[in-house]
Amino acid sequence: MIITNIKKLITHKTVNISSKICTYKDICIGINRGKIVKLNTDFKLNRIKNEEVIDAKGKAVIPGLVECHTHTVFGGDRIDDFERRSRGLTYMDILKAGGGINHTVKCTRESRDSELIKTGLERVRKFTANGITTLEIKSGYGLSVKDELRLLKIIGRIKDESDIDIIPTFLGAHTFPPEYRENRDKYVDIITDTMLPLVRKNNLSEFCDIFCEEGAFNLAQTERILKAAKKLGFRLKIHADQLTNSGASLLAAKYRCISADHLDKTDRKSILALRKAGTTAVLLPYATLFTGHREYALAREMLDNGLRVAISTDFNPGSSYTFNLFFCATLGITQMRMTVEEALMAITINAAYALGLERKKGTIETGKDADLIILNTDDYREIFYNPDPALINTVISKGKVVFRNR
Image (tube, rainbow, N blue to C red):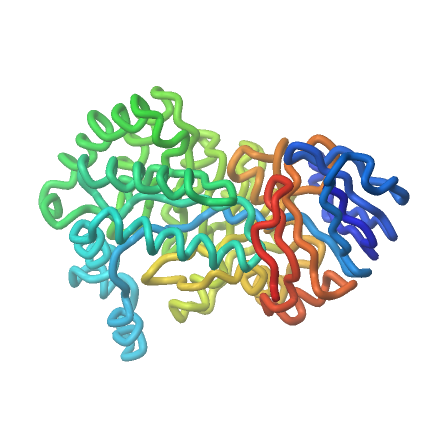
């Protein structure tokens, strides 16, 4: 495949932690076997028989988006929770009353595999239409040995049937299921002694995530799970400091987690610890907006102190129902004082770092996967100024066209 007539190609360098972008003008991209093989101003067309040629028509090209934190597979919805929140109930009020995550757990357990696969694939297609070429999907709505393994296997089925890359993450430590609400340490035992070994044995995920928060897993319980997961060779993640400054970020730094996510309440001490540990901060500003909170993560302070920052939708049924990663990046610009260049990094190369995929994804460089977006504008900034999916013309994943905006 050759992509010709690109007015501007916008990308970053994999090893560049700064926000400085690389702009190539009037360039072509050569793709072979799903990889970028050449960036040049002049190509001899049809040098390979039946080679596909795509005319970018003088528009801009950017890397395919990396979506590094979602809860895409679930049954039912949480419209009732949305309505309750409009009457003043908080996230914790709903959770303590038995709503929230446990409502979705009930609906998911009651859903047939075929239903979860069908809705999961439909959501993956919506992500693809929004420019995502790599998508992380967490379990966490099963909360039993049988149902967590089942969800990870379903995510695996969706991965096999999708045109984009799907990254499964084990989140058995999402919250405590109703049957263990009064015996929480027993559920932690089940995660450490049964779930984690089975997930590893069956090669269902290389990542283990934990929701460390008031009403969910406390620091001691989180550390038990981190120790067990690390011993088994999992790469570690934490939902940290979303609602309270609990010290979860410091724990993420202690265990050198690949990412610490949310961080709305994280302080400067934690920021410095995360930077030193090499952890990527994954910020989820639409969740903050959707739940009616006013305090966003300190992205500007994180960036100024050298902490790598990614942005995600946090797509889930209760607190962040959106497929539009560009809009989430716009919130990073307008609410968290990020520059446009930093916002682009946050949804491409930095998000790839949050999944350990920085050598394959997130930038347009020779040798990397050919994951690209052709825009309907020659000014990439417009997609943040007006985060409308209609500005996406073509999405390419590993050298294959997976979406065209007709």
